[in-house]
Length: 376
Image (cartoon, rainbow, N blue to C red; front, side):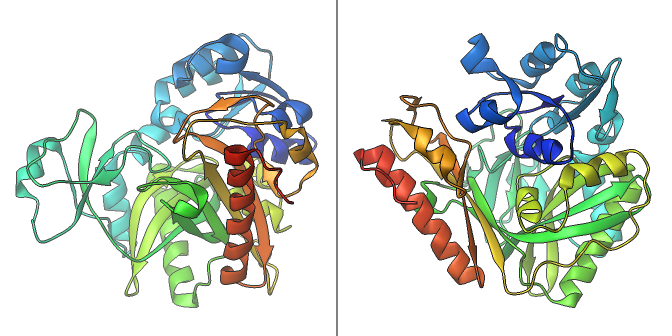
């Protein structure tokens, strides 16, 4: 069983690994229901998504093992309920509590020679240096949701923190861990707030893989994967989001679970991510290096966000496209600021891959906004 907001990518990886799986999530998109057993809270049960609701539904379904994706890392108690009487393929609740604690993460990161942006609680906002740029962000957020530029003098909402904005190269490093050691699976460039995908602000809208990184940066990221694995006893696949500026790595957050960028590692043909996850959770030796990324190829993933309220047309033709996933049902209404689908591309370098990805997103937006059929 796989539970979380969006389970399609991890479920497809499990199926490719020869596993039978049932998924519980928020969306239950057309392509997912065509490939794996799925129960979607909104579509099938008429309930709003929450971690607690997804786990409660999962408790009614039969599966000997359970895994999770975002946003369950923010809800250790829900993970504990999900795992009761089952084998848990993922970090246990106690590990999640430590890994998602910003102070504990900062200590582990600094031991590895990297930095974290200065982060202030609501009581500390008054000490923020006005010469710096600051972001307000939710402690239990994800994907850039709820992140915004801070206006001096404005109070934080409950559950928010103030964090220094670091400009530079945004990226994510994915690694598998067995509780003691880690092996880096890949590093990708992050895309956020890109209007080409209908995204605004700091909303996550995709990745380009692999990130062109020198050996010095790769060594720093490997050290971070080792340090956080030892500090928290991480198992399975995990991800660290970071910004690199002037040779210094600034860690934004640790995602102690499967992350969206990992789908591109699998699409590149390097390895099956679910197999790596299950093996690492079982204590398999992960000290050997993962196979190298294919030369002369960059893989891209983009999340297409609705720029206004739309009603999609007949999307069944999207199922035959290899560059579109997370397909909505025909006639489905999608509100402004909500995801429409995911698009994929491949290019010889980052620039060409991004351009192919942008064109794929543009074709989707043209179809849903004007009714003109998109060109594959």
